Image (cartoon, rainbow, N blue to C red):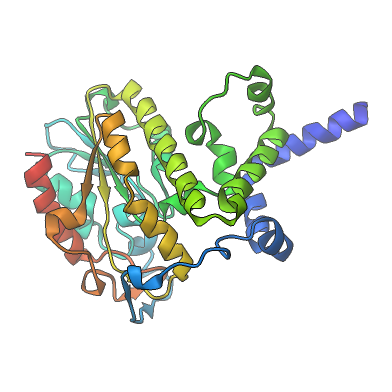
Amino acid sequence: MLILFILLSIFNFYIDKNINTIQNFINNNNIFKNIIFKRYDFLSPDINKYQIEETTVKKLELNEENLNKFCGEQRIQFGTNYTKKPVIVFGCSYAYGHGLKKEQTFPYLLSEQTKRPVYNFSGCGGNIIQSYNNLQRYNDFPNVSDTEYIIYIYMHDHINRYLTVENIYTNYYFAFPKSNNKIKENLLKIPLFRFIYAIIQEKKIIMNEKNADLFIKNGQRILKNIIKNTYKELKKEAPNAKMIIILYDEKMPDIYYPVRIMLDSEIQNSDVWDEIEKETDIKVVRTKDLTGFLFDKDYKLKEDIADWHPNEKAWKVFTPLFVKKYMI
């Protein structure tokens, strides 16, 4: 029994400290990928419903010259000399400004046009929870409680980032309501049980008896829980802040797997955002409602090292319209 206890303790410690490594193993192992976590294969989307455009992107080499544009530098503080109340930006590489000079990014332009300090906690490959965690780790914010606006830029792929074993394991209290079952809650504090729980939930959400509608409904449910629970935590630190979610509406390039386009588009264009607005004081803004169009290939980088991202033209067009309507 003592040996078993020691082994379990070691395994628990390993899971808790190496969940990223475990997730990578799951993603790259054919047994897991093709049997346990077979994603999306059961869906049969009507591709004609979605905006697909054929084009090619010149792939750039990740080298010292390109490093800063491609997520290589900290872009946290903008306009700290301004005296108005600050703004927090959450999001992923779209908000960070992947492929752009920092002077071309949304947080920088937002600071310049509002004359406010902007604290950018977005990060490449990130989402709202990771941005929130970045805020928690940041020690140089003068007074978080003075924040007047919290802006989260949501793009199509975020839902997929919430539905992995790693993210369910790490952020299960954000994604799922706390249970009244004390036994379950105590077990979920143990890494091994939480890991098993994450596997079960991921499989349940992804497969769901091969029903596409239920699959999308589950994604909406998880997304709403995450947004509301993160916002609840943010309000404790910035009680007077107004939260705005920007939905980045774009035409999808053809490099994406069509089923993924279907899933992302269905959730991003669903009524889940109306539900969030009704149940909170969050304001949801669609880029197409301000610009009058979806961002197509003219508003995407022509040279990239990853997926297509907004170019400087996209943020230059959108930011002044957004600031004029929602922040001045």
